[in-house]
Amino acid sequence: MSNIRRQSIISSLVIYIGFAVGLLNVYFFTKEGLFTEAQYGLTTVFIAIATMMSTFASFAMPSYIYKFYPYYKDHLPERKNDMLSWALLTGLIGFILVMIAGWLLKDLVIRKYGTNSPLLVVYYYWIFPLGLGLTIYSILEAYTWTIGKSVITNFFREVQWRLFTTVLILLFLFNIIKDFDLFIKLFAFTYPGIALGLIVYLFYTRQLHLSLKISKVSRRFLKKIILFCSFFYGAMLIQTLSKVFDSFVIASVLDDGLDKAGVFALATVVTSIIQAPQRGIVSVAVPHLSRAWKEKNMELLQRVYQRSSINQLLFACGIFLLIWLNFRDGVITFGLKPVYLDAAWVFFVLGITIIIDMGTGVNSQIIVTSTYWKFELISGVILLIIMLPLTYFLTKQYGIIGPAIATMISMSTYNLIRIIFLWKKFRLIPFTIKSLYAILLAAVCYAICYFLFQNMHGIAGMIVRSVLFITLYAAGALYMNLSPDIEPILRNAKKRLGMKR
Image (cartoon, rainbow, N blue to C red; front, side):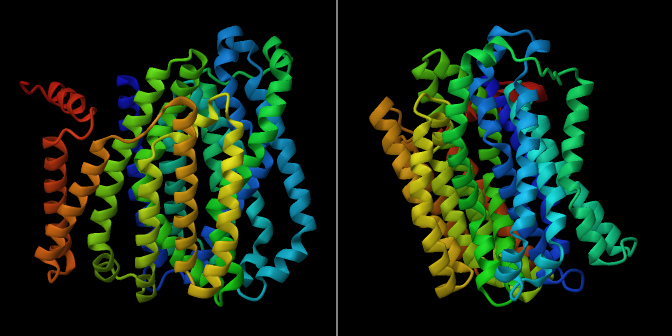
């Protein structure tokens, strides 16, 4: 557990650095006088479509790597390991098919988005470089996770990619990039940029081994691999569509769709700050879970499940309420366009959804790496059946708050189903009484800070509320020992600082 803890902390720190850069980018995108709401909205829709393209093209190759890497590692020397080669080749063939489909569907895109989101139609073909880069990167990222280098992948995805965007924004700000036309075309090559960076890293560290000679492991597990990828491909499509469908609906059905997508994007970006520990924990936990299933180590599975739950719940509740205390003041104080105040309640609903999702621990990863991985597809179908119609109708009825409500309802149902499944099949449960204590502690700390300083605004109000909340929440979590990882972290910190115990 110490290795998981250490890498999770490092990964989370890297991800938070990335979020800091991302927030700087959001500030430039949303500040008066730089980008329009439609231009910011276009970048977010670009990412949503590129993500969907990547999922279609990859044919579940990242999941194939997560599931079968231990078998390749245990039975093949590194230079004869053909897993990565076949995964990359499959992804490239898949993206060629995506490009053909994209060309054939151009008229449909014009009909659906031409009226409410005309910029998307103008720059439609520039999404493809972004999608190709993300496809290659996602496969390489999965491989890099399995060899225990999740920190470097988190750096490239969370920090380096955002730094590329920052550079483009600054060049635009100083008029070196003369107009938005060139900006968005260069933006299309940001994902290819980080894919190239990861390739260079793996090559330089001599961990990039490519072989097109079919190995004995590939031959032995071929039928299982095809069956696994066939089922999990559907699950990945469902999961990805559930994450990006709201952006598609907003851009297509609401008046000034890209403008509304820009407001929704602000809420989504701020909400993603809450998820930093989840990304770090998942990236580190996957290879350990896969190994635990292979060795039938149920004790380790239960321990990872419960610790991931309480650690993520503590972070999620704390970060969510810290942001919510200061959301409106932040928009006003930092000079964002007043229209972005409309993102407040979208953030609130999405934040509650993230707390629910993170509080249930790594249930998805446990299922995916088990022999019951088919259930991920079944639960995903249920998610999609609930989410898609709800998102469409609630968006039509309530505007940009609609997709957030639909996401909260569907994700809550989705996680409940997976919790019940893991309990029934394996007697695995993510919660303890400390889960309830964490929620109550967060609520009490929020109430104290809100009612004491609700009339204090600006930078001073934000600082006072934030410092008091962090102090109360951290002290409470430490006093009640809500996480078994708190004491080892403090002990290691004191040791590194040369402090006596």
